[in-house]
Length: 235
Image 1 (tube, one colour):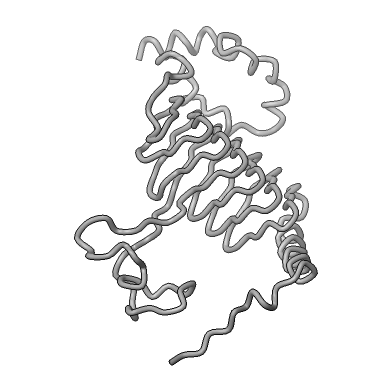
Image 2 (cartoon, helix red, strand yellow; image 1 turned 180 degrees about the vertical axis):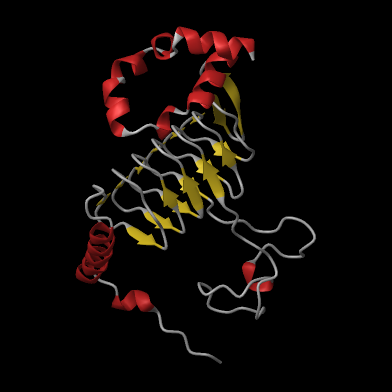
């Protein structure tokens, strides 16, 4: 029988600190000049970032992409996720945490269908079930604290996920959803306003444009240009 070493015997606060320090230095040097910050004891693997990204403390971020200005709050566990620009991820959020088969396969236990490296023993020598599917967030999405976004979900631009929600199906543009399972509560704006925001895609403008127009962001009616609104209504 194969011998397994319990690596937790070797773990200690100093070792964990230096592991985090290596990760922090590696990524912040790689994105030097883009104002990237990694919080205490967070781990990052195989991920890419834009400008002004912040990862809070004690986070796990793996196989992810973050657009400009998007941030992840502390104690979040984000896997296999593409995140657009200006997204706000609250604390203790879980995205693409993994899945197990619930039909066809006799057992839900991964030792019977996958050769995962995090298990002490496997009956399988190959992967028979894909236990991770990518999650996609659009731009300007807000995910509230303690939310869980299951694998394979798409969340469109401007959506809001209420705290403590479990999202099991796609969320449309500028929808506010909540609950377990998450259901539509309301839309943030009316259809004309949503169409305008989708067409103008303000998040693609440069920082100078956002800065010079910041007062327009405080009210949707101020944000919408009259000539553009007429065009949207006519389409």
